Structure formats: C-alpha cells, structure tokens
Length: 343
Ligand SMILES: Nc1ncnc2c1ncn2[C@@H]1O[C@H](COP(=O)(O)OP(=O)(O)OP(=O)(O)O)[C@@H](O)[C@H]1O
Ligand SMILES: [Mg+2]
Image 1 (cartoon, protein in one colour):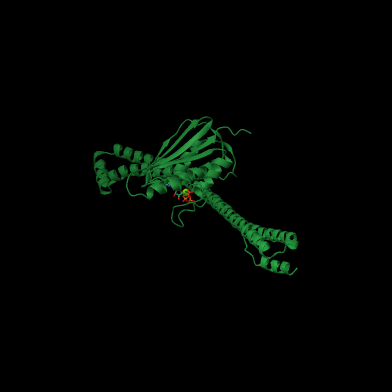
Image 2: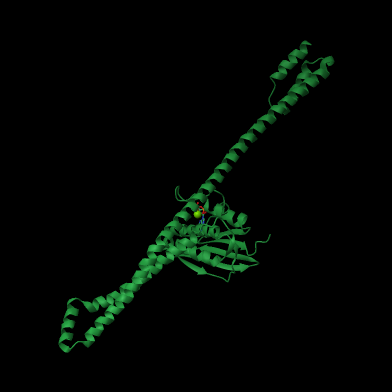
C-alpha cells in the first residue's frame, strides 16, 4: 500500500490542467504502481482528473459570472441615463410650454392695444389734416411753420414704418410662442392622428435660431396624409436630427451650410429624410451612431443618446425603420413610419 500512498501524494502536486494531469497520472502509474494496485490506482487517477476538470469549470464559470455582472451593470447604467435624458427633455418641454402659456396673454393684449393705437393714430392724422384743409391762408402758413418746427412730416412717415415693423415683430413673437406650444405639447406619449409636415414645420421653427448663420433649412414637403403617430416623440427625433446636422455643419470651416428636410410616402409608409452638407460620418463611425453613448462631441456637448433614443422611438415604438447614409460632404438620415398601425 505504500506505493499507493506515495502515488496519491504525487497526484496532489500534479499539474492543474486536466489534459496534462491525465498524462502525468498515467506516467506515475507506469513507473510506481505494482500490478495488483493498478486498477485502484487507475480509479484514483480518474477521480483526481475529474477534480481538476471541475476546478477548471469553476474558474470559467466565475469569469462568466463576473462578465455578466459587469455587463448588467452597464445595461442598468445605460437604461438609467436614457431615463434621465428623457425626463430632462419632458421637464424642458413642460417648462417651455409653461413659459409660452405665460407669454401668450401679455403678448395678446400688447398686440391688441398696439393695433388700437395704430387705428387711433390714423384718425388723429386724418383729423389734423381736415383742420389744416379747413384753415384760411394765414392759419395754413402758421400750421406749416409749426409742422416744420416739430418735424411733423418726418414723424408721420416714420410712424408708418414703426407700425409696420412692430406688427411684424408681434407676429414673429406670436409664431415663436405658438411653435413652442405646439412643440412642447406634453400629451402623455399618445399616438394620435397627426400631420408629419406640421411636426417638421414646428421643429424647424424651434431650431431656426440655432441654424441661423450656420445653415439654410430647405423644406420639400410631399403630400403625406394625416396618420397615427406620437407627435411629441417624433418632434424629439426631428429635433435631434436637425441639431446634429446644424452641429456637424458648424464644425466645418468652409462652404455654405444646407439642410434639406424631405417628406413623401412610399409603400404604405410616410418617409422623412434629413440631409446635410456637413463633413459626413466615417464608415467606422456610421455603424456606431445608433449605439448608446456614442458621441464625437466634447464632454458636456453631447451625451451620445440622441440617435439611440430616436432609434428606439422609430423602430420599437412606431414599428418603423431608421437608416443612415453618409459620404464626405453629405449625410442623410431617413426614417419611415407605417401609415397604418395595424393590430
Ligand atoms: N448629421 C451628422 N453629421 C455628422 N456626424 C453626425 C451626424 N449626426 C450624428 N453624427 C455623429 O453621431 C454621433 C451620435 O449622435 P447622437 O445624436 O446620438 O449624439 P450626440 O449628438 O453626440 O449627443 P446628444 O445626446 O446630445 O444628441 C455624433 O456625436 C456625431 O459624431
Ligand atoms: Mg444629437
């Protein structure tokens, strides 16, 4: 039995890899085990080999477990960031619509008062003109002298311009407020019969101040019937595509910026494409633009979630399609939404 005790001791200190261990055990048996102990030694060697194999499996399983844990942490982190960004957008939307509502009233009465002032002003001018016409020659001369002293003719001309410019200004402010209200309408994420071209129009109005001096925005609207979609979400997608285009063009030094938004229908789908003449996206980057946190923008300027959330909205929530094509000097993002939602 002493050869068996020695054999087990040597097995204990054998190699860790089960394949190496098997040949190691066999060579020990050949060298140290007497024929009567051969069967017992074979069984012991097999048991020890299995033990080695078991240990190796445990190491692999532990690695897999660690990997799965870290991946699920990443997923939780990604989901949390998406939620935070969406909540932030919703809060911004609420803030914008709150401010727009607050502005609506004062703008309404200031514009109304201004219009009254304009018509009163016309009556006053007419009244003064009538007095002037009714005056005798001496009085007319006195009126002419007063008019020149107080620069009345200049004031009358300038007043007309002031009224025209100011009512244009009121119209612009009213349009901005209406666009903000339309854009930020928080409707609890509802699908409803909506107008895709109107969504593009309001979103373009929201972006126009940032696009100014960077790119012209051209609209090429096709005849798209109203269909069921979630306008709040689609506005967010359009906003992100337009801002990405503006930001891409802004980053390049030369050339005239141009963004074209096109809508049309094709095979029971409403299609919308946003094309820009920015620098384009490299082939390695193009595959990653829809990945969460993929951004080439400096820290603080981009979270890299815009397109990821947009993809989710188009593909998962609306059962549509989202594509990107890019070459130097031209990038096109196209989304397609089903005109009928089916069941
Ligand atoms: N029109 C475009 N032209 C060139 N690159 C683009 C364009 N649109 C997107 N990209 C690239 O795709 C990346 C991801 O875009 P995405 O909108 O997801 O994130 P982001 O704009 O970087 O940050 P944010 O979360 O603020 O939107 C951008 O950082 C940019 O590198
Ligand atoms: Mg973006």
